[in-house]
Amino acid sequence: MQGVFVRLAVLTGASLSLAVLLVRADEKTPKGPDEDGTKPALTRIAGEGMMNSHAFGFLTELSDDIGGRVTGSSAERKAEEWGTAKMKSIGLENVHSEKYTIWRGWTRGTADGELLSPVRHKLHVDAMGWTGSTPIGGVEGEVVAVNLFDLDNEIKNASRLKGKVAQVVMKGRPSKSGILIFAQFGDFLKAAGTAGAIAVIGGQGGGKSEGMNLTHTGILGFNADFAVPVVSMSAEDQGQLERFLQRGITPRVRFNVQNAFTSGPVETANVVGEIRGSEHPEQVLVVGGHLDSWDLAEGTTDNGSGVATTLSAAEAILHSGQRPRRTIRFVLFTGEEQGLDGSFAYVKQHKDELPNHLGDLILDYGQGAVKGFQMGGRDDLVPSFEAFVRTLANFQALQVDDRVESGTDTLPFSIAGLPGINMLQETAEYNYTHHSAADALEAQKPDVLTRNATLMALAAYWIADRPERFASPWPAERTARMLRAQHEYEELKAFNLWPYGDLGAEEKKANPQN
Ligand SMILES: [Zn+2]
Image (cartoon, rainbow, N blue to C red; front, side):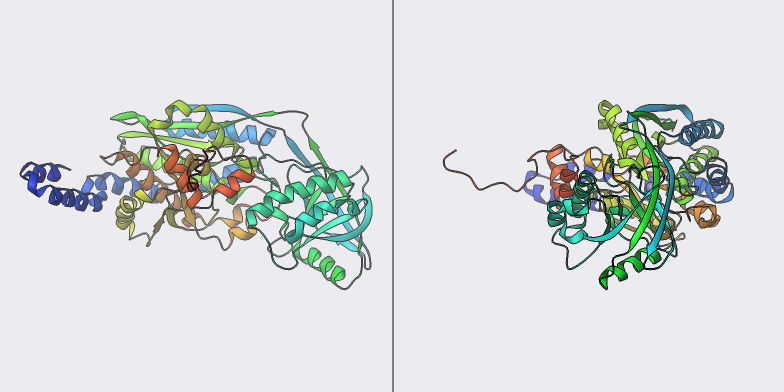
């Protein structure tokens, strides 16, 4: 910056346009660690991260000793205690939990399915989260197809589902975007329940399971629950039923699905610990992953990996002896799987402090290697972050873009105009472990986890320590325009999460009568 002031001082009024050009040119070459003085600290952190990491040990404890930890359950509470104890033993400051409630709790019971005719065998099913039960002892009925791509009519004709099992199929072409179909699928489930459908066969967003003989559980909206039992079925079983339906054969099935809801809200908490900044402790970068998981397995990759990465990143920075200029606040969110409830609660509870935030940095794409960073809507930050990743070339080439990731705890920060930074990962294997019975420790390679944790530590430290503040929140209008340009408006509006009214919409033509 100093160079700019020197140049400006010697310029006369006539050269003002040149001065502007010089200032712009200077701003366009942002400083990376080689120029901004952070390199020596980053080098130490990289050494600690790669040589002394306990990431896989953290992940092993969380996976094997606690296991599946659905928000609001006793296992999840145990995970909060574990996370708090770990943060303290690592040496983080100001370790505490921040309580909030989710609208209602849910516990999985049993889910049994059987194909009765035209052939007889067991069906591999598991209940989707926050869905209901069949009568005790089970119930049988005929399977009928409902078209996910024609939900308008399926909702209108829901009365035909009385006493039937509705199997979601995809016929023809979708007339709306995937996210609007996902939102309308909730309306369909309500209509099917009201009509007296026995059960619905349809996984996440109504889609089919991926992987060999796997089911995938999940929530069917933001904080959404449904009285009708909805099951995820293995692709093999669902495919067979679908082929019967296509041939005009009506399969007959029996389901016994038992789940339990709580009568009201349940308490949960985000787990928080800090490395306080040396110069601007009031300025905060949030770094984290989510502590809650689904319950068909150990919740290793979703998102034990993110939890272990976060703890290991904190450890690497602390053990390096380097203290950043600004505060790094490590947060293990809960409620992510029910609709990003923990990160929405954080943004609400820290509303007054948000102007002092720099953004959040999240890893929640499973077990794969980190391949890039997404700036959560903040295109203005891409050049400076690119200058940072250039110094990580020995790890691998890392991509940087400005995309908003709406599927994890980055979203509430992006909505607030802050960079909700998503660590983009390889996902070939995550497609199978995501929310399934395969989400266990076997899925995570320790070396990849260690490397990801080190990258998180380096990114967090650089953002918090670079001489110039990395980011401040954008004003509401600029944020609203960005969210619309990134096609987030549709989804947020459909789930009642859009906070900006008409802000950022294209200006309507002036009406002379007004
Ligand atoms: Zn997740």
